[in-house]
Image (cartoon, rainbow, N blue to C red; front, side, top):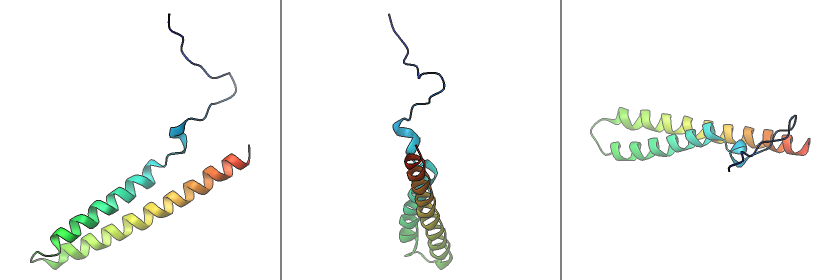
Length: 82
């Protein structure tokens, strides 16, 4: 006999995954991967690839940090308002 775990009506349960910031982490990962791609193409004959990779990596890392900071502050405010 199996019983499904259910939350009481009118009250939601927080899970560990509720506070994980997937878009911010994805942007940071994209920035790191783009930076690695930039380092591997910087030695090639085309400097435009290195420049475009540097710009894309910078934008992704800055946006990822900003998104993560905003989500952290939002979650912190949500926890303190309980």
